Image (cartoon, rainbow, N blue to C red):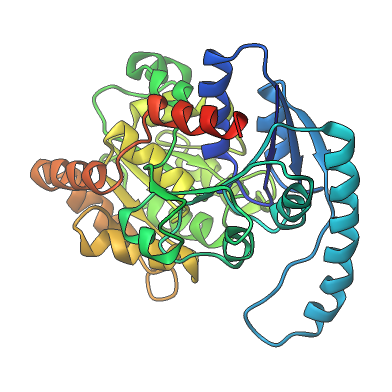
Length: 359
């Protein structure tokens, strides 16, 4: 049995698929996996760490606005579609699974032509263009949020919740203190700008550091693709309570475990992990679909939203200090986030997968 996953460019459409892969592999250990991703995205490191064969599909995307690049990308998409036809013919997969991203669109179209079952998972509050384009040919569609059931065909759409990688749940707080050489008497803030990092989040974190002395220790995941000069200068000034790392693999679970507060972007992959671990979160969404995600969660009393366009480091530090001092609000945030974002259950994932491969 062979499964093809697709998606990349960011880790948003990647982490839930890795969680699905782990569940499938545990139940069906003979299954082989292939991943079709982007050339320069961060997904390759995590995918290959899971012993999944990684291939690149160069494609374009359709924008919601008028752009010259839409014309150029039409030819890229056509080329990617024919590449995908060859890929499906060569690999002969039993099922294709995607959680979004334009890499998946030509692949799922090609799979439909060959009669290969496809599964599309919708995470964000707003349905992306890629998932809209795949929905009509999808065999099944699952959603992370109940509110998105209305946006797809009732006959083939299921509210699943969001899958989470099991290893994220295996972090140990004491191991985290040792791994990162932290003081157990001072609260820990874990800040990340997402899979590729965020220059704006990095700026806000660095600006806030001077206001957190004695109140918090900060673990900062700055991103491999971002300039490091700013954060490196801050480390030299505040090294007694501030440390920077460019990328985590196995360390991620212990960084989460040791954190009293998590600061993150607004991608659903990261938010799902935060919810699974019951951590109070301060989210700094990227304008666009991430902002819609976070506004929806803020309205439900599940996260604190910090606007990257109107906030500065002083405001972020004030928000951090106030939350660290408010145990009741921390519990409310984590409880509300877990209620609104239930985790996908392994038995439900396996039932859906088994139904697909039997088609």
